[in-house]
Image (cartoon, rainbow, N blue to C red; front, side, top):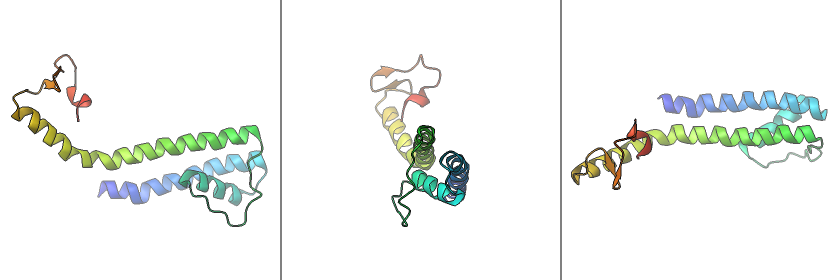
Length: 128
């Protein structure tokens, strides 16, 4: 329930408010209307390449290009976090199977792939 709440409600709300904030900055820098700037930022955040006859909205100023580039980096980071949140619970069964296979072969909990993990504080951070 928490994961679906994040994916279907929290993530789109974060995406929308991010486009509003970054769109406001872009609106001030480029002299566009607020709505057009939000539309451009939503296209950048969601990576859709749809135009509704708005071809004159091309970023021209250097600082505006930096803002759009920062938005692109933000989008990649946000997508990475979202994928990590979604994939985390899916990897738990795989982690359990790998641990069972290691224990079945008599390698113990401190040996993974013939590498001694006994000196590492938290070996589970380094294993699947």
